[in-house]
Structures are given as structure tokens and as C-alpha cells.
Length: 407
Image (cartoon, rainbow, N blue to C red; front, side, top):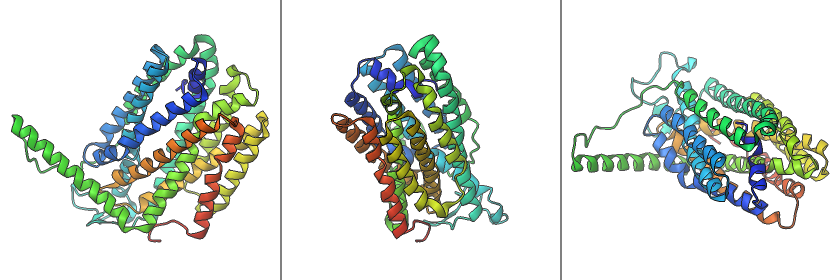
């Protein structure tokens, strides 16, 4: 999406202050906070593939608003639509991929669950994950993030000539088309049928509709209780959720990277080109996910050091260190997601996964608010340096008490 690497500049060039831009990002995250868990519950009740199809269409509608009516109201509504789309996607993709992997796990050949039963279902407790499922999931999710980063890399490379020739309007139009293409890709995901409802309330008339609504509400409560119960029973699961939320919040600072780049003296029309190392680092981090998990602590410590040193350098060359930090963080997030999935049962998998998104979005609002407030006194460099401290906190926590299934 060519609009992605330049939309922060679009906001600034429309006349918005840094604090107003941070406020838009906070609205984006707040939308995700409100809808994150409900959308996860929904994904445990309806077709996850269908949700992955609808999500990018909402995001594309937001981009269309930015393109056709640039201004604070349209930017705000666009972020709400993007937030809804993100909530429908968050947790849903991870749950679909992990569940389908358990169905094709070669180590469980001949011991598949009965037809229609959720893979790995064995009462309320999740089945012990096989090494193949855990490793394959981490690699697939990591590589999907890498593929996404490659797409961003191409969009970033295109952003400079596209905006030079057609301005922000051309970048927005291509981004809307890209969102539509994402919806088509979502339709291609494999998905086995999951248990259907009891069929209560089927029929016509007001009473039948009300009965169906009550049935759906009861099912939603059951899924939510199941998910919260899993988290409540497992200290390891709670730690995994917390650490993943912190990493996601720290990575959310990538929304301000264009401002960091321009703050080093790079001309606006060249900013997209200076974003290429960030995307390349994210590709490398995602592609290497599932490997070297035992090095998580030193990698996170190095991540913090690189981001601090690069951000405080104030020189374009220092951006390479910040890019390396973002790539390492992408690797760490994919590894943390794999550890989280290993401890979840399938019946409420999307719900529990959405709790990490909820925690990440909640912390992200704090990051955006702190960045907006801090921008009154500090430039982008010092703010990025301060934002590296959560990586150190996670590294220290993991060193004292590793996170993993059954721990």
C-alpha cells in the first residue's frame, strides 16, 4: 500500500501537529481496544476465513476517505474503519493457521479428533502441542509477516515515484486497490467446518429472531468464559500474554518512523527510500522466526541498544541501527506468538489470542499518548530512545523467568 509509508507526512502536510497525529494513532488503538476481544469471540463462533475477507475491505474504505476528503474528520473516521478491520484480523489469522496445522500434524496421524470436533480438543485443557506444530506455526507466521514486509518494501519503493507523479491521491487510490486484493487473498484460506450451533431459534418471525439472538449471546458468553478461564488457570499463559503485549506496543512506534527520518534532515520526497532498510529488516526478522529461540534475551538487549544509539545519533546513518532494532523485534514477536499459541485450546483460541491484541493496543495507546506529550519537549530521536526501554524490561523478565508451555 503506497500510502502506508507516507500517511504520517500526509497528516503533517494537511496541517496537523505532532500531538494531533499522535491523537489519531491513539484513536486507532482505542478502536482496537474496544473491539479486540469481541472480535476474537466472534472468530471462535463464525467463519474465520470470512472475517479475514471482510477486514481489509474496511481498511480500504478508510484509505478511500483519506484520499477523497483529506482533513482531520476523515482521518479520524478512516482510523476507526482501519481499527475495526484490524480487530477482525487480529487473533483470527493466528487461530485459523494454528488450528489447521493441528489437523494436518503428521505426528498425530491416525489419532485425529472425530469429524466436526475442534483439533486438539480434549475437554477444557489444550492438547500438548507437538514440536512440528509449534515450529511450523512460528515459521509460517514469521514468514507471513516477512511477506507483508516485502509488500511494504515494494510499496515504499513505489511511494516516492507515485507521490512525485500523482501526489497523495495516487498513493491512496493504489492503496484502496491493494486492500481489495487482500480481501481476495483472504478468500483462499483453507478452513474446515467447526461445530455449528444447536439450531435453536431457527424459523421466522420476531420470536425466532429474538431466540437466535439469545442463543448467540449465550454462545458468546460461553466462549469468552472459556478463554478467560484458560488464562486464569495458567500463570505461564498470563506471562506470555503480558510479554507479547509489551513487544507489540513497543513495535507500534513504527508509525512515527517517517517523522524520525525527516528529523535527521532527509528531504520529504526521499523519506520513503530511507524507510526501505526498516522494511528489509522486518523481512529478515520475520523470515528467521522459529529459529534461535534460546537467544531471545541477548537479542532483545541488543535491540534496545541499537535503537537507543541509532535514534540519538541524529544522523541518517544511525537509522540503520534503528532499522536493525525493528527487525529483531519482529523476530521476537513471532517467537512470542508461537509460545502463546502452544498453551491455548482451540475452542477459545481466537479469544485468548485477541487478549494479547487487547493488551498490546491498550499499551499502544499509552505509547502514542506519551509520544504526543513528549513531543512538546523532545524531538523524535530522544523519544525513540526512551521507547526502547520496554525491550530491556522484557529481556530482564525472560532472564529471571522464561516463558513457555507448562512453566
